[in-house]
Length: 272
Image 1 (cartoon, rainbow, N blue to C red):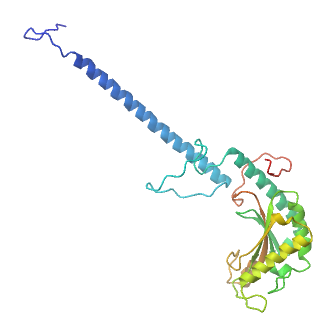
Image 2 (cartoon, one colour; image 1 turned 90 degrees about the horizontal axis):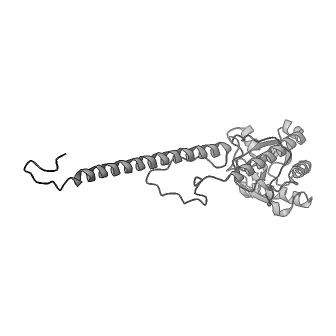
Image 3 (spheres, one colour; image 1 turned 135 degrees about the horizontal axis):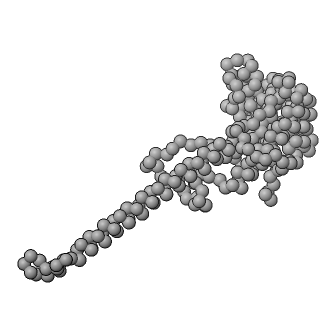
């Protein structure tokens, strides 16, 4: 190419052509980098959502609704590779082991208390807190009384025998229906439910069935019903004392159980 212009002068601006090509290439390079970073963020979001869905299915933590865009950012987790509300793989395995323990306890007690279950004085089920053995008033207390009937002790022995070899605690909960009570001994359902719970706890301690450090008692009056109070049958189901076998961490045991290989009895201890 002739470097001279039509007037015979040399052009000193040919560098602009190379500069423009360089700028174009740099622009294309950064566009590719930005596109790659955006794709990675989408993939990370998809992976995080998949992990959360898996943990929800295991019942490790409850489902939550999406947060609005202007909501404050969640705290940074200890392990940045996991979502903020995720748990480690060790916790997932521990939760599965606890669930297996509680399932075995439930099977043992269902067999040992089959007569009471058939008579509808005892029911056994999983709840959000753990395994619940419900003692209905009709089989274990006189109406308006907090003193356990003699039939209560054999049931407590069987419950204590099933959980004595595990590290789990036992919470005694007293519940009533919504019919107010006002007697010389109890001024409200709060007093009655609490007295029944502490009465059962005292019986466990007097018979040396449970260590005191693993026991607790609470009264809930009529505010945690399991049935409607508009029928006599519903009120009868609500008048109960619940024996709740508690794990050491919060797991929704009412959720579908995760798959886990069959194996021998295993309990979680502080050394695990």
